[in-house]
Image (cartoon, rainbow, N blue to C red; front, side, top):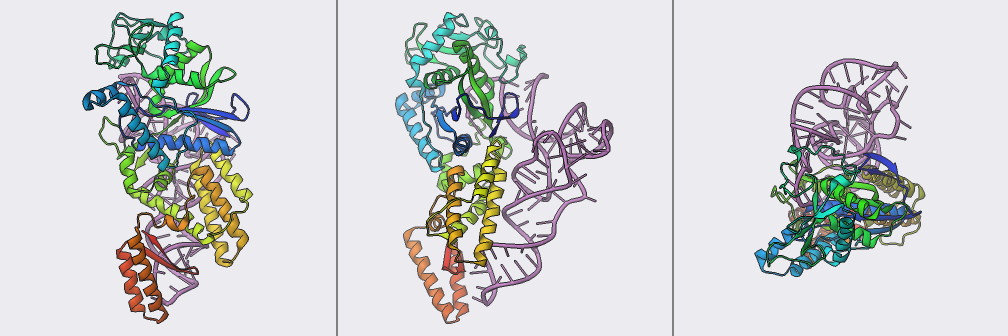
Length: 466
RNA sequence: GGAGCCAUCGCCAAGUUGGUAAGGCCGUAGAUUGCAAAUCUGCUAUUCACCAGUUCGAGUCUGGUUGGCUCCUCCA
């Protein structure tokens, strides 16, 4: 199995720090607002990684944090009058619900910053003791980047001229312009504050992840975890800073591999809060089934930017539909054994840094071959059972194709409409039996107007929601 | 201003160590169908933004040009 490491910018063989085990930590959301498609994509990408590693025989431990202490959350507290806990637990629940709708498996470890304060304080204290971190007069604690000779290795940034830092607020007490806050002292009484040996305040964003990884992962051979993941925008400064803190505090490297997913774009621009072009997951899920969204968002390679469009989503759904039509042909029944060649080629494709395009083309191929064979011999029970097994394998590895196929095509159709459709189809069947084609075609037009497509098959007249 | 990524058929999108362009959608011809739909079969880029170079050979390597995006500020 190979993965692309965004630090050396190369595809590398995956060699875990402990044989047959893989530990992954992904930067999760700051829970002050609803998740958008970008969060979904990141979550989906690393869900795919986890599934692929498992399918390749690794025991995967996945960690994904919730940043539940943050300036934006505090602002929301001030704006709404609600407690911080109320706000964060609300958005955490929402996040988990929405990710579940996309078929994202829960992480094994889901730490929160608020539950990791001791670890955070301890790590900062260690850095202060080594004089790698320093407390300034306000009580803020900064990381001294000049003490870490490897600072910059993650993002390959070297220069620290004034221009590069001009957008960062300067504090005259900082030893170096690049130094960043580990701890922010509280200013007023209303601030959300936690007491520590150095000052009352709250943790900086970067230290949270370092401390949580240190707390939950044991590591081995000079690394805390195998793979650290997150969005491409986290490479600098977030991951650079995380790596520096952990390296200096623990004496070993944070992660053996670093992986970053590309952005979701709207009209060629990154989706972000500041641009105001966010497409929230909750809204997308009102319009589209979670599985269809998953299929679409995972349909191109995780490292590429993803230009989201609803038209493309509809076109992609057609590709998923073909899998489910085949599943209809072979259902109901019991799965037997997955086709070995198919299994191997899918695993090879995904094992090559999650080459989803190849994986999907392999699936298209087996769908066509199976349909062809079924056209020749519609009663091939062995093939039907193998096909069910193949689809189960697809579902386990890629997370789609697991639904009952008839209900898949009926999403969004209520019982009343369903009865109406079935009555119309029955009437049409009668008309056809009497060769009243004018009547049967009229009924078909009525169904089309209702957004229902019908198809006459050996199994009778089947219908699908368009 | 500094750093980096990307540019392949009408659209989406693959292309390990350079060796002669996957797949999907759309379109089109046919099989099948009462007609459709679904399904199957055939056709659909001598060409990979542009210009040079290295090479027996480049979409793949080098240099440059143009265009797009991202990071340097919270951000998946």
